[in-house]
Length: 444
Image 1 (cartoon, rainbow, N blue to C red):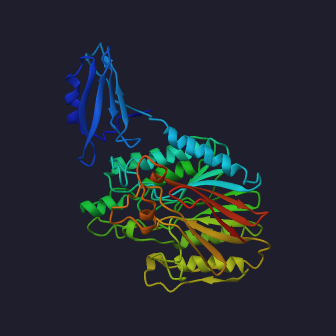
Image 2 (image 1 turned 90 degrees about the vertical axis):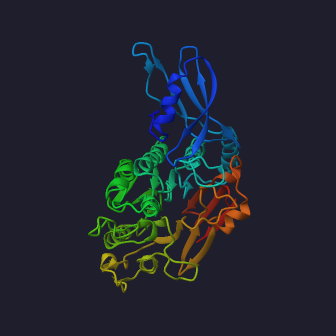
């Protein structure tokens, strides 16, 4: 249980101090975004207080809180946040989903549970991004409890990055702690919202709200503390996971230098700058040179190139794609893309001529809030839909999600995937749940 994280203003909490008569009372708490959230205050016979969020469409509008009364000090003790537990309709849905899948999964294949773009934030919202982002990660653990997964993954934009820094850090930490709850290992790649630059952009702050090590201290410390996860580069978060002949590589497409201008503001807005830098590319080359017998799937937040083969990042996406192609073709050479920005210059030699049976099959990502797939020079790109709720009436809702008519309290509220990679069958099967295509199959 977490102590009261000050997501609500103290003034409204203090108003409830005087309520000590047993009974039920309507009240409101004001969240970090200034919105009044409806609660029911329950006072017990021994003066315990329970703040119960009101329910709408099978989704609660906020956390559940409890505090006891000290007879010695004649006052209430600190508030404690209580876990709400899984939603029963989601639990049954995912259990049924796992039972159907289990018949199609070979024991030797690598089976992953994946969500992306949860955009979690401290807000009660019934049609768009909100605190249900964390709930979707908690419900990924329900799928994990069925025993079908070898690893869980989050492909970035875990948080929306629009809250005050302390609150965003709490939410990012809660998501990592949730992924880390079970014995099944997890991985996370950085999304362009995960540095909280949306908050900085909105409020024109003089200083960045996250420091250079904030994300790494919250995410990478727990990620790379797992014995099953192998680290190649602590700075970017480049790492990998093996099962048999299959290797899953985790790539950071928000690999942006933390540089401050003379006025103290950041030189690069991570939300607007997708990139991969020299150090991560050099470490990736080293990793590939030790992957000459592996069938490889690479996971990132954003796609490297688009369906037309054009650059999809601001810096070096196309260059990294060509590096992956060079691995498959067993080439030797130098990666030195033309670059006008010295902060993202790359000059890296590679030698894949000793590659025996190693092959990069696919690059899997989120970011675009839709589903699509395309192949460029033998690399299969597979894009996954966002877990975050995108109601049909919002301007930023993609056409893909509008077609789903997503609603809170239904299976369309969330979206997730089980991805099964078989080296023997030479296949990748993508099974979707919620607002996702039920099945996509790729053969190599």
